[in-house]
Image (cartoon, rainbow, N blue to C red; front, top):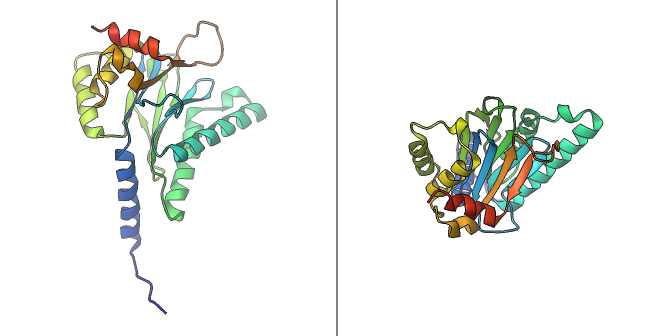
Length: 236
């Protein structure tokens, strides 16, 4: 009968964390930012059907990096949670904070109890009446959660992208910027994209609009490639 190798809990958690980080870093990056027009969500994603950005509820959106099947299952679970809570109680009872807490519990349980952690990072975003009232939550693979001021950058070479992003906005007010400038800034700093209109096909973009033209309670709008190309071309 073979002996079982002993692995300390500290080493086990470190190995799981390293495994998850490597998987996430291999993926393409996502940037979400609060601005004057709402919350812009920009992902480097040439796929037209495998979305990294999605709507959860009226004023709540979701963005993710990592393994598609894992974060898509989480997105679907979030939609079911929001629909059930909104139907059972009130639409106002569905909040970004509540959804982020549910995701944190699920990610934490998988990280500690399952053989393999989820290779994902998530962002849960809730639109406010002003940029100061927007709430942006980042969630790590181990269930850790943090509220981020202004923007979130996930996936890829995050430190390099963050440095380029901060350099672009040095001396500028992100909260006062329009959606078009935020999209151009993201295209400029994402390593696999660029500012040319032809690069629009490499981007997946959506906006939680602060003001909707139809007056609908749903604020999420996905931008098509020609619209993204027009925004990129406007910066030339």
